[in-house]
Image (cartoon, rainbow, N blue to C red; front, side):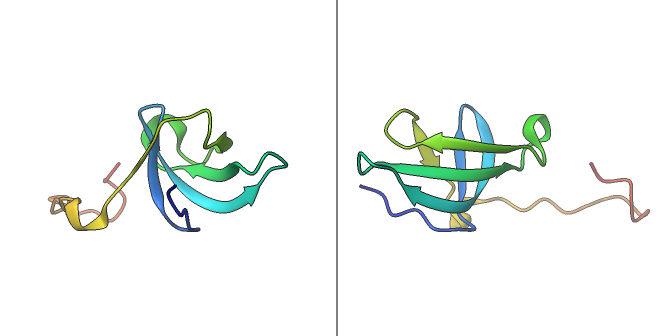
Length: 77
């Protein structure tokens, strides 16, 4: 069993989400309240049940940072 925490980033249904809140339902399973991070789901809110979804945790140590080559403050997407 994975311990989820608010602020944790996860991949669910091939999209990246940030966990906002975790609740345990009456069956003892967890419900993750998330907000979208990746472009397709950006700023969308969703609830995922851990017993129904395949959830991959994003390890911050494995994230590759890419420098921003843009000189203007608002040109990055």
